Length: 350
Image (tube, rainbow, N blue to C red):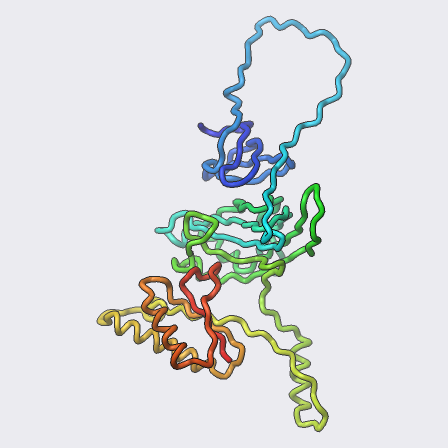
């Protein structure tokens, strides 16, 4: 059934529904929920509960004027009660941003953006992007617990505007006590090259299609860029100038280094692989692997993510074999599933 303005609809993938207030382009509509908020949704993810076409309107060519009556109080509109199913894990905030290509075969052309709420809390959301020294709000609204919501659709020409993003979040529960959560502001710098590389779009628990998942809040803590404060730099310089002093200097503050990403896909290492067989390609990838570990050997605590992909698992097995035999002093584990799927290994220099 074709959806029209005024139809009452329910969400197929999420709890609740509302009334269609306007029809947008590209198959999107604006739905007004029982809270009075209008949210965008794909028409294919809605089901019509009550259509205006199903309502009969009898014709009265000679209507009889109704008798004059005293004005009656306007009844309060009934609000649908949304049943929230809470989980023990949902008491901790975990919020993510997801990007899906409209067509996987035309990567880099157009994308959809979604916000994912994996908590028991309602969230007031303000999603922004950086423009010079200012911010531009791209979406704001209320998210229900344990849902994903469509935010926007953007084309290739708008990708550069998403390098710096920020999401402000206020969490609460309705009609019941809850643990207080601080207001959150998560600011990220997105590696825009990921929008053009298929292996960054991985299988996930939220969508049927592969998606680029960017965590915003993990275990109540917002994701933040690495920021080195001027005070830290001045303190480090002062400690260096006093290093020859007989007085005992204060311990230095350890500045956490950003994670290094090394993409071992052969098409990212070489422009041309003509004349190379599978063994040659594997040896070259391992050569780069050893070179990177040698480069960062003295940087204790440095984390390096080697992106090898899933494939047949030959490169992954070879890397793990090298780590177990030649680099026993190093720690390694699977890298973040949210960011790399099953296709990356994280090594920590010790």
